[in-house]
Length: 549
Image (cartoon, rainbow, N blue to C red; front, top):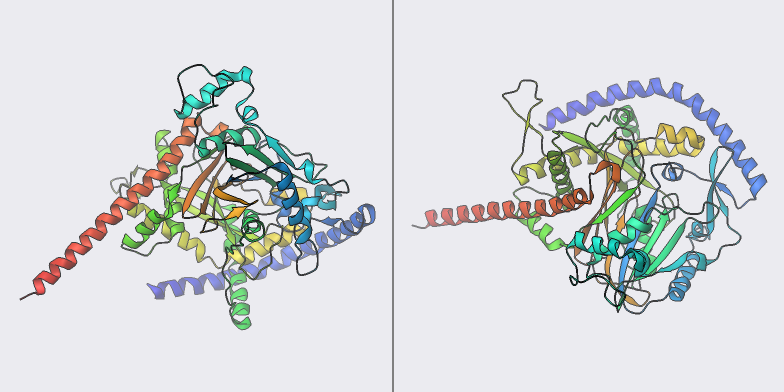
């Protein structure tokens, strides 16, 4: 088997090297031309707006794209137990902005005081002279979340949907709004504020403070995606904001320079295959290709113990990561959704961010991550042998078999050596091409959804002098994709977030059903792995008994 893999890579390397030699003379003149135009634009921008103004670089350009039907906002929510007020958040946030510096002596979070704008065909960052922290931190009452007293029917409808009415009587001012869980409250908050549009003439971020109980608060942080990616924002919370810093990424020793050089040269020869993967995605399913409405729906699951995932790992008959387990559950979720919609879909294309940093890398506010594309099996992947064309699919009943299929897809992405040079090429083109051209070239057409899995602190933490009870995030929307799954772990539990365009689902029940399907697949995997482990134990006992004279 290994022999055929080696032969495969030798053939791919030779073929890719030939294609690279053909592509370089074609792409080089364009790169030099647009590089010269970019240099001229930077000089003019600094001359007009001042030396502190700079052109946006890398994929900040693409991730900052706003359309009629999508708005790139990263939402992060924290529930805090203790006393909390707007003044304290303002003080702590201002300290974060002013007291953290990078290795160049610049403020780490200076983008929070800058405007993301455009000039001469390029996106730019320029200082905002009238920055005031009070304009970015606001309090929101539960009355605003549920609507005013006049909209009592709307409040009642929300509570009935979650089956959590405190009493059957009509609502009045003295009664609690309804006895909802935090996940249910977050849906209401995000449906109302999650996609609220920022003033483009000011720094595009804000903090909303909601008192959700007598002794607890929910804090919603909203960041325009151009400011930073979710990986750096997660590091910001864990390393610079919580009382006791928690480092998400371990230090690792980079390989020898000679090894890195040879690997880079080899990966460049496989670059044409990476480019082909970008343009070859053509998904056909109910979640792809339909015109988006622009109205987004947010959902969040209940807590799922990490211990359950570790049990699945321990009992599994083959080596499997938590990452694979979670992605397999999303695969099952999509399959169940398509099944309910009477669609038979063998696979979809999903995009997932891949961190390119370790503990030794300083925190920056920027978008720096590789994007991996997964040909994602959605459980309807076992072709019926009675059909020669392979167009008739049957349901794969084994959760472990589904997990194996997803693991195989993830391994193919992880072993794709063209991933890093491809993302370097994308970053380079984004830095020199005018914004309109970069956005068109790097469209995500052909892809169905995005999936992001981020780790949080593994222990209980404090922020603003209060204990963090819950922590969650939702990935931004990106047209033409209208679906995003986010997975975040904190203190031994994880939650799953779902953002979906309302044009892609019939009702909120579809969203609730997706999250329930995710949880049920975890139960399926736990049950099957426990059965397998029990069979192995029984076989060992039987062997031991046979060996006894």
